[in-house]
Amino acid sequence: MRRKFDLSFERQKTVLILSGTGTNAWHHYGFLKNFSLEDFNQFQAILGISGGACVFFARVMEELGYFGDEGIKKYDSLWRKRLNRYGLIEKLLRARSGDYLFHTKDLHLAMRELFGQGMEITFADFPVKNFKCITHREDAGGDGLGDLYIADRTNSGPLPVGEVAASGGFPRRAGKMNLCEPEPVGGMSISDFDFAPREIKSRLKSYLRENFADSQIVYLSLFKSGQKGNVHWVRTGTDRFPLVGQMLDAALMAMGIPNPRHESVYRRSFP
Image (cartoon, rainbow, N blue to C red):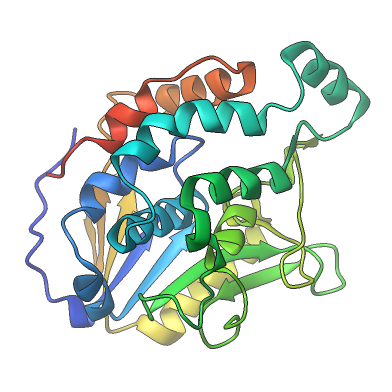
């Protein structure tokens, strides 16, 4: 059950965190539609994780005129066409042999078809200057764990925001299964932070404590609502059983079956 959340909070002292969403990234969209580009820039910082980064990028693309009603109507068919280069039977055979089932490059191509020239916008030119994309850099550290990589306009200025969000939106592995072959961005191998080792996730907690200890944290989640200390969890998902919804969305995508939930979730409002 979603609880009411007062949207009139003081943005200058607030860090907005968009959590991962599963394969249907639109769950946070209703919340984001309450804010303009000017509003977003008033936040102390905005952190996007996995699908949360992708849906924030999509919201900015809509504000810039690169995305809208026509885009969401073709979104599902485009996603199924681009991401399912292998049929269901071939996916099962590849899973058994340890080969990748998906390719991050295909996600880049899908987003390029959806957002056009918007995919060329770099962090240096991104209109929301306080946006940070939270990823797992797998080729760093030298210990097999990789490292936390926070892409923003300071350390990732020349990198296209859409490509970083796309690469950080799919995991290389799920458990022991090779899931999505990575596509290097700026010479780096980055993937989904939600699937990073526990040690990497703890580094994000340390980063938040060191940089935003006195800030209000508004954390968008599919599962949780409530408050503890300076953290407010806002449940944006409307599924009664969100984990079941995530599993359904993932299964439909993997099988290449049309999923009307993408458009219906996109069109929901919040609160």
